[in-house]
Length: 127
View 1 (spheres, rainbow, N blue to C red):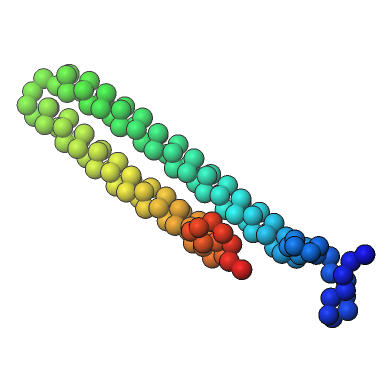
View 2: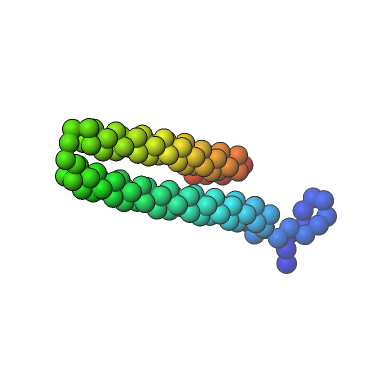
């Protein structure tokens, strides 16, 4: 038979164990943590794929540059090839900076959600 609490309702807690309410609250906290971790993992995977794509683009640009530079027959033509390469690299650097900023912001937002959910850096929930 369950113990009677001072208010007169039956308590579902066993002596020495946490109450059902505490267990449910802990379960909800863990589910929220798992959701945020899944979201963060998804963002990391997206960022990883984007950076792999960026590396591939840079390799293709370097290959094209080498081909065009080898085919250049004059100094003005060589200068034009180099200028075009520098312009494209600057555009890529600008795009990289935008992606880095967006990725950092997404990671920070997930961190803020994690902290605002009541989790401390020690990994324990606030009580």
